[in-house]
Image (cartoon, rainbow, N blue to C red; front, side):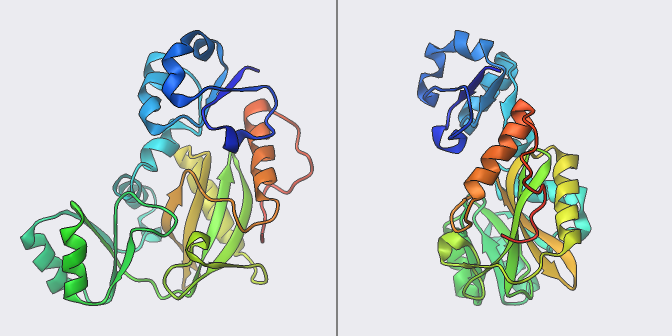
Length: 264
């Protein structure tokens, strides 16, 4: 199996992988054409590798396209599973739309930048002035209801399996580990949340992502997924991810690691 990676850190331990710097890919076209899989290209490389060289890409092209920004992602979720998406509006930024949102949406609500991760670019709007400041800095208005939650779930999908699932708790609004959130290993993971995410990921052909899920009245609600999810704070998660990549890409036998982790 001939493998080429453009991200050596996410493929550590994968056997027989050749690293090529993304910016040098045109100097290695023969190597890329001969490869069986191209791993972790940058978004800007995708069209050339997929449509010109016609190569197998991991993560899947769908993972890139739907994960490109929150607009693409949310619209896909609203079509695939609308009952599991918080009430969300995505509007062009105009004075009329800003006024309309402030007139119709009760405070507080959530506003998001369409391209951000690790909890950055997510704002709790508690006043008209805060929303006007958000609107002054963003071309697209993305507003979402604030859910009545104290924690959320991170559910990690690699290939066709769940490799980890854990609760995150933060300051009452940001739960991301990168923003100082903590992982709670004592609370059980709802099995139907695991099943929901795995079914959705397989339906959409998303094969490498960290899904963020809130539980509201016992029902999973999708917040977003991150294609390049963080692996800090969970002992052994990089090894679990690496083993799942090998099972998926190389057809390596299961090493005995559970395919669904109910806790970190």
